[in-house]
Length: 329
Image (cartoon, one colour):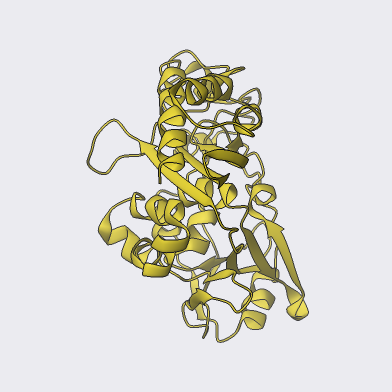
């Protein structure tokens, strides 16, 4: 690991100014929990000249329900807090479950929601220093290599998968992130529009600009009749990276579904929406047949790679089970 400068930021404005001062040769990066960042530094994937510590900024760890009914999660709110907070379990159970199933208890106590959304993709080629040092690397080596855990959708240019489990639930809830830039300029970006398809080398994974700080995640007030569920499928019951995960948010009148939001993670470069599955559910009552029809639609068009076709039937089952769990929540 190369030497670097450490700065404790005292305000969002100071952090934004410092982050904007970086360059390609001397990058300046933000540090929250630091779980993914420090791993990448140790592995030689990134070498910042300066780290800006966000944990010294007052107020970024606050969370709670606003008078408007929205839930605000400061960027430094830990995954452990999201998983255990009674108001999260009562109002946004799918997100609480997603946070509770991320990583290990030790990591959840350190990892923040902002850092979790900004972490780099999971891929042993992307995270291998050898491939980052190869000049002129052409294409995605995972396509003809070890791709068991890579994407089965939208993988024409890259087969990487996004690494955040809370992102799947946040997109299903139609959450937004607040970004603050130079001069205190603020903008709200829906989480579903926040992620960009990652590229193998130095491509960006989010719409966040140099000099912007992710300060808050905002969940909308939910209408009455909202039910939700989340499921993460792994190879082992103990800590493991997902094969896939699914979040389903339904708005129901009695037994009839009036709106549906179904999002899938770890199967595409960014969280993927199952729009046809949503359409199938609207106006119907949930039973095994309807859930199975929606699940089949969710995997239609999958383009698995040489070693990950097994993910298609697993994803179909997880979608079906999560729909049923949401309807019966």
